[in-house]
Image (cartoon, rainbow, N blue to C red; front, side):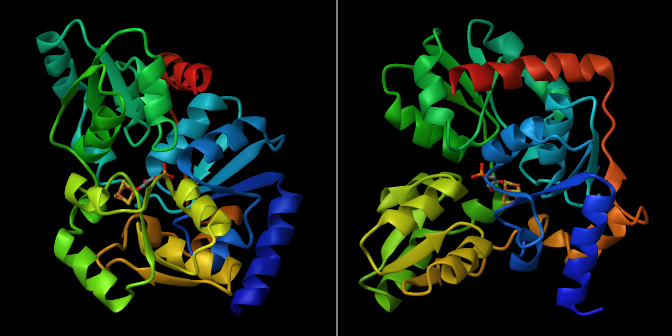
Amino acid sequence: MDIKELQEEIVKLKKEKDVCILAHSYQAHEILEVADYTGDSYKLSVDASKCPNKTILMCGVRFMAETCKILSPQKKVLLANPIAGCSMADQMDKMLISQVKEKYPDYTVVAYINTTADLKTICDVCVTSSSAVKICKKIENDKILFIPDCNLGDFVAKQVPEKTFKLLSGGCPIHACVNVDDVKKAKEAHPDALLLVHPECTPEVVKLADYVGSTSGIMEYAKNSDAKEFIIGTEISIAEHLQYALPDKRFYYLSLKLICPNMKATTLTDVYDCLSGNAGEEIELDNQTITDAKRCIDEMIRLG
Ligand code: 13P
Ligand code: SF4
């Protein structure tokens, strides 16, 4: 089957089987075309809880599928490709954070949504890159232990100077490997372009940006800006989607190092195979994990 035929089969199957397809913006264009909802990790988790379908198929990474399961435990949640983990989410587990909490008992533990369901069970509130600043400002406690991403944590801490932040040395290896030299080269090649970056990039890179925001934030900014050229400092799919959506503007990759192998693991064939019942993985979480992890996601929704 060619791409068009495969897409038609997917659309037919999802209707037949009452499946809602969610695709994170880092997925390939042909996957976004068959999705019912697309967007950043926060938007997808809310969309999943509101959609009427009995089954959710997540084209993204494992923590995103787990978040859907936590918010919609009565639904069947499938991860299109089971190898799609998140290198950041896998860095910190419950045992490590329990020890850190003992060291800082009076701190509120703020967990980036890029964490496992198991780790969320011992955290106080979740945040996404689009809601982190707002939520950290609203938290009553002025002492915050922000995990796992120290780059996002640094970005938030600078915008919430009235609070004390403790950061650990975790983060996204993809975003963190872009450096000032990459920025210099991209700006030299495209001197009129604005630089838009994700807060998972290092503070040195963030400092040079014209705009810092989540994947959806970057896309909105580019859409609404009068500028015509943009250097995109996040996973390269975002520059591709923007080029499709806004053909009169020009989008350049900040660096070709910005390719997430986890996000790229899912193919259109995986989506078809998963819908056919021949691939994918059903996310199963025990009731206690769902109840405990939900507390910190509910808190994110309440404060965000
Ligand atoms: P968003 O929260 O912006 O969707 O980002 C998720 C992610 O994994 C970024 O690397
Ligand atoms: Fe995880 Fe980084 Fe990939 Fe985002 S880009 S899914 S944080 S490994």
